[in-house]
Image 1 (tube, rainbow, N blue to C red):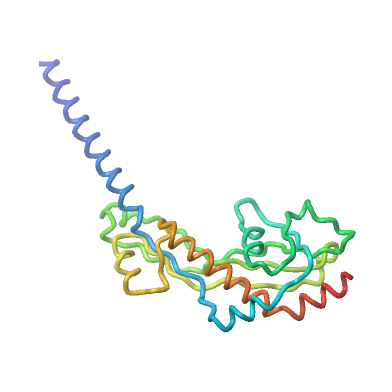
Image 2 (image 1 turned 45 degrees about the vertical axis):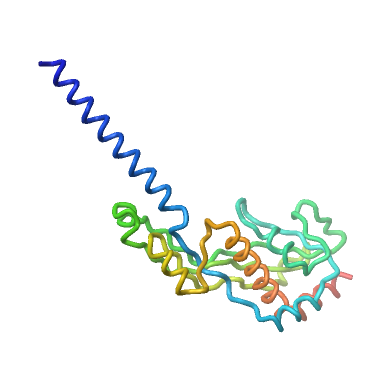
Length: 210
């Protein structure tokens, strides 16, 4: 009787384990592609031409927290002669510094119902993407130029994300390498445009440094 009972219990445990693994695999598949993010605001072609006409012939150092992409993002704008980590910058040369400011107002809810319903109940988050940073002369952080690269966006988790990407051209799939590359370039263009809005201020700093 005891042996039969344990066999039944083992069967129940194996069945539950199989169900759990199956659900976990479904969730992994569902998570890949069933989410969406918002592209940075699109820069017009005429404004892109304006960006290509501007260049700052000076090196700039970046001060950022671990996990931030300030150096990479500024480097990809192509606006500065050289972009280095702050430790590689010699202040005796009066180089500029770009210091990370603050991230957008991100929301981080737990998608409990989305997980329990296998994605049929979507989690929709209206938040703020991007970040701010300041530019100033190395050794003179009091005189700062603020650059705001934040923008409003919507993040969606669940099957509805697929529909949303079809009807909304500003949404993209962050799990898709091609779309993610487009999203990065859109942000580089947006950052470039926000930087050149402060072109006169930046050039005044460069004049002071020379």
